[in-house]
Image: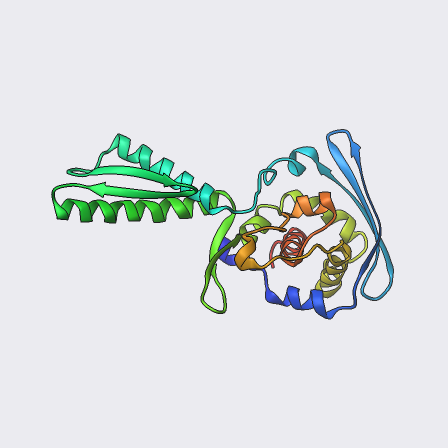
Length: 247
């Protein structure tokens, strides 16, 4: 269940509070149906660490390959297309519905001789728009959120992305546990944080204006060897769940 999997704010605190880990070496080479990733870094205690693991090409170029920055016009086009399809199959009684496109904006015009029918059509289409907008966000791994100053905006659904990345990241379990014991949660967590923190940082854009710009899903972050804060915390959460599925 999604509710049982939360990305805690303490991870963000740990990323900024610890001494900066630093990457010493990074490489990825093809290996049959996989790519082999190799890392060397100094952790927050300035100790040298190393890790090697393989990720399948199907995982690297599969699930989140088409993840893109959220754009309102694509969402509106999807919603309008689905409403048109629904109304073509089941027309609303006593009204005529037109879709008017002006530049990148799509508006819906409803006409009829009965005010009650027009109001009913408005209500039904509004319900369809709300349902389809949520469907578009869910299918594209986005969600609405409200900022501290009460602005509604769109951001990647970090929890869902992390949850659906866990199986792909189980390849990191064995090399991590060769270094730290799963019986010591603090050491396993610190090792994971040091590894992720050492990956080069890329600037986080404003969550309100960026709508996912700069965010890399976990495997894309490993492939590109860079990520912003949100990307790194999502990767960290997914690795920790792969290491400790009962937590």
